[in-house]
Amino acid sequence: MFQIDTVEIDPILQLVAENQRLDIATVRLTEQQEKAITSKGEIGSCVFGPVAWPSPQPKTGGYVAFGGFPGRLRTLLAFDKLEFASWSSGASKISSVSDFQFVSAFDRDYWVQSFGRPKHMELDALGGMSGGPAFVNRGLYWDLVGIVSQYHENYHAVFFSMLDSVQPDGTITPPPV
Image 1 (tube, one colour):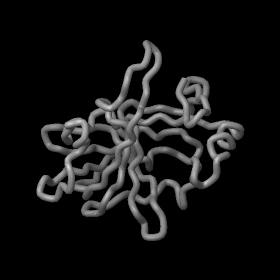
Image 2 (image 1 turned 120 degrees about the horizontal axis):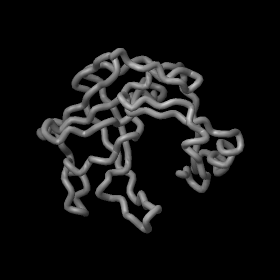
Image 3 (image 1 turned 90 degrees about the vertical axis):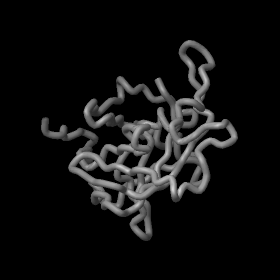
Image 4 (image 1 turned 45 degrees about the vertical axis):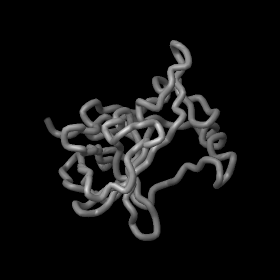
């Protein structure tokens, strides 16, 4: 089980599809779950429908905004209970785009602030953010285009799986072998 706000979700019963190579899984929310998640209005939580699906692919040289829960900032409360106390976000330039992924390599010359300074953490602490959303700005709206799939410490690069292989019904078209 996991939860969004106070709404419990059973990932096994609600699983639509998964693809280990893309590091993507989709679940279907019930109407009751969606209503509970959005019951607090705009300031609480919202479920947004995309302008078009799949979203157009991001472009090399464009920018990506992303977020997630770094592993070093998680707390093990009990054998079966984790606390994700800190949401982290960032944005960077897209270095390359291929059929099923895109990459953003960080350029130290443009770092404004080191990641997690209060906890004495540096950029290599990004591990654990896999599954976090990645958005590009389309002018009047933000477009969900991928998810964080891996951080490569040697290259200071974040790898993202593109979501264009996720179909409108939640199924996933696997990449060619």
